[in-house]
Image: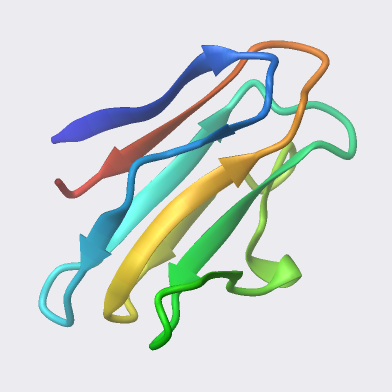
Length: 92
């Protein structure tokens, strides 16, 4: 099953959080990114703060999907984009 976690928009947005456990991985995907635009994958640390997992794990126009298999609480965060960008989550 796939869920839309950021609706198509040009403004900055942050998804609701979602959990990944060690038995079930989840795939996140960004639709509509162009040029150097990106969406960050963030994880909640032990202190309850959101941190970007790695700039190497960003969703980009040329690499718009990532499978997450490390246990934790995650969310996606996108900045302002030229065109509408949406993000989805598969494995919910």
